[in-house]
Length: 265
Image 1 (cartoon, rainbow, N blue to C red):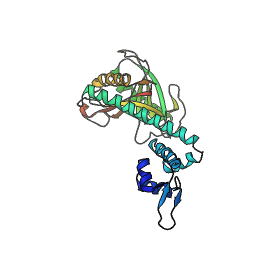
Image 2: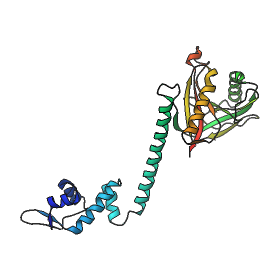
Image 3: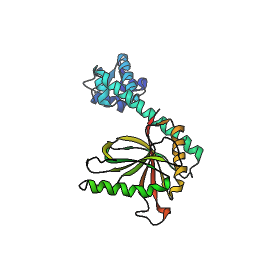
């Protein structure tokens, strides 16, 4: 039999910890002297203590350890393993992104953010445009037509409007696009547009400030980042227009978010 101080030295835990485990019903002393109040432990309990300490080192809470010791921990172990796998994946992703950041330098123009976008109800209109320069002319007409044919459908606030490029490669002419706008509810489909649910989805994105002439560089940076960091594109590249000619006089103030739906691995 060992007094609590000696037992704490054998188990490499503090006396305070042993008292706490007793209070929580995890490890009670083998006996307590009724006159002195001294607590005594046996070598058998050293085995039990090691099991508790091992579970603590695996990240289990006191309540979870209690369940494991009672033989009810199979699901908890599975859940903890999944939690650690997710944490490892997150850390691996951060390491990869930090290395890329280190390689490119802290003063690089673009910063990639991976984020989740909730599901939206949208209208979607496919078009083929002669060139990128025609994009600004076509988008207002699409919105005006849909608003006229669906006067009770409103755009969401804040607005979320984007254009997806459907060719899967860069083209100078005859570019296939899909113009989309988040709306508050489904409307009636037209002859050249439809209402549908978009997402939810995970995207890698960058913000580009300035003229649309620089979007090609931003797109190339984003696509290179996706490949370098172990992600796979899961859809078409899209441009979400936040500020533009409709609310900013100077091109220098235009703000565009470039998004690519992605999955890890």
